[in-house]
Amino acid sequence: MSVRRPLKSLSAAVLKEMTDGELDRLAYEVRKAYAAVLTAAGKGHINVGGSGTNIGSTVDSKRTPTSTTGDGGFTGDAGDAGYHTGGDWPAPGSTGVNTNVTTYTYYQNRTIGGTPFASTAHIDLYSYYVYGGTAGEVILEGVEANIVDTIISACITDMATGDEVGTYRITTGSAPTNGGAGTWVNKGTFFVDTLHSATQNTYKYWLKTDLTTPPAETKPIGRSGTAMKELSVAHDGDLVQKILLPALQNRHDNSQLNYHVQTSIPGGYTAKGTFLDTRYGSSTVSYTGPSGDTYTTTITPSGTPTAHSTYYLNLQT
Image (cartoon, rainbow, N blue to C red; front, top):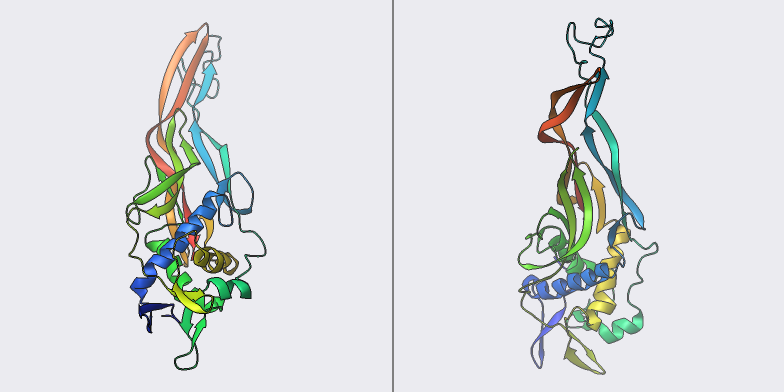
């Protein structure tokens, strides 16, 4: 899977490449660090009606009641067009459709220009050791493409379909449960679906910031002056903050980790929740009057709400 993996220590004199399982905690801490960036409205953050790159829009629509009035034919015009022959009430109209109840526009902070990768000084101070091209040669990893292949690609896969730490999700009601037990932070209202007389659903968007039980920790080996040391894998430590997190953030410039609000799920995207604009599917006619010589026929939306538009919050991977 990897070009060259971080080295771990088996003993004072023996180094060995970390396995996929041993890299899980390091990749998790990168996702946790990225979640902190999103919480602070940094690169990757999405918002409703704010600023950044436009990632799509939606419309909440609803059918509205319509009333028709008439004089009931008592003034000598009972046969006029639009009235029941011999009846007192005018014929019902049709339920109106208001397609502009509320328009929602969504944005993502993608920060044009990307995040600079680690400097040579940072690589010397904070990166991890790997086996180099020469047999037995140990060097500090300073090639971003190798880091992406070894750690960041697996990190993004887990963001899409694994524990989902560092990603958003849409739900109604309580917090999501996707990806295992962890913390989902309510980021606010994403979409409100209304009917003519009430709110059908309020959709919230949530950010997953951590796991209740993280993967087991294995520490890679880095530099301490002229000696070697085990590196911290904490999300706020130097290895994650100065080497790995920039490599993850730079994937935005490769069209990864970009969100889109769409009406389908194209290839290369993972849906992070579905939300609906619904309308009543039928109607009820009622009659009132007379009030003086005025008779009123009202047609009101009723029945079972049905989907008019289906939307997805998609993560591009």
